[in-house]
Image 1 (cartoon, rainbow, N blue to C red):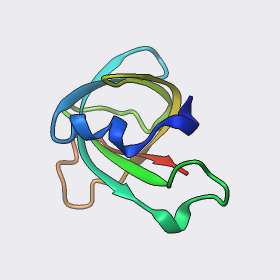
Image 2: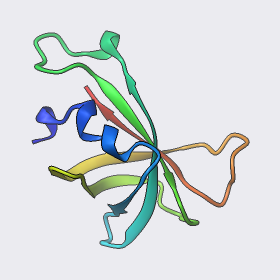
Image 3: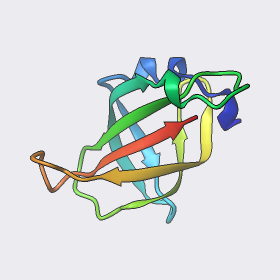
Length: 102
């Protein structure tokens, strides 16, 4: 399923809210901050181009990384790896995350 996910699955969520289900089953409200297509990172022969999705938590969280579930409008991503990025000048109480598809 993850190999069929494209940036179009995330576009409706840009600047909107969603819920990320963490490995322990808890729900974390998030906002999809941006989508970046990265054609140079695309694997040869891949049916879609590589891209990344940046997320921001809407409440404080200690979550760092792991396999999560993310319901989208027309799909539910299961076992998608989400990794935390440093706050680097942003609100350190919130979490900033990245999902990479290549």
